[in-house]
Length: 94
Image (cartoon, rainbow, N blue to C red; front, side):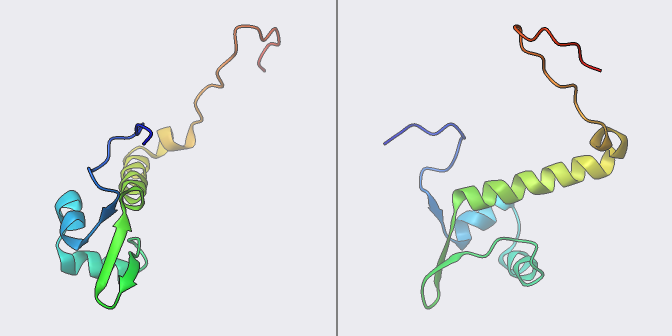
């Protein structure tokens, strides 16, 4: 098995208990956010059994983190970082 480049849980699939622990949100909050389309829906395995892939939760966390940062720093969010120049690029940036 290949090594991960992002720190994740020991298992790839998370149940509701894992997700509530990781997000520090209650089950009812997660269900409410899913109903509002603001939280990823799990993959249904069978009736009453559903799991999230851990990357779904990481993506949701990063999306919320960047949204909060951009809301707190609207000028920085609008500014684009300078384009990195390669060492062998002889062109002059405008």
